[in-house]
Length: 141
Image 1 (cartoon, rainbow, N blue to C red):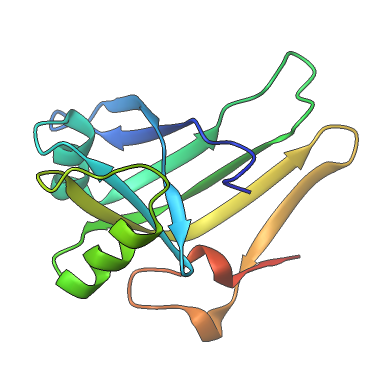
Image 2 (image 1 turned 45 degrees about the vertical axis):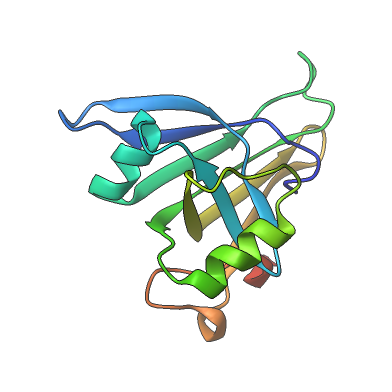
């Protein structure tokens, strides 16, 4: 799913409560969804403050040839050195040591393939953590 849509849009909640939209390039490594961000980035500050997010894929053309997907949940600053090293190891681009690393947990997910209809993913309660689930635990329902 993420491989088809490398550029996505991340919605966060600003300090004043209004939504904010950002271009975003997350990646999945060993079942975790990560993203690196500059510490001065408004999206990083929004996530540190409120943790809630929504992600929507870009659409390739007016016909939606590649479909679209959306997920939402909670994201957390990675402070565990081994988890950060896993993110660095699995990242498709060179992460800067000064960048903050975030892990994203999924609470809701959907995909729309035009002509085929809306597909919702179920959350596998067996795979659920205290924050939600990791992307590899989604089940189509």
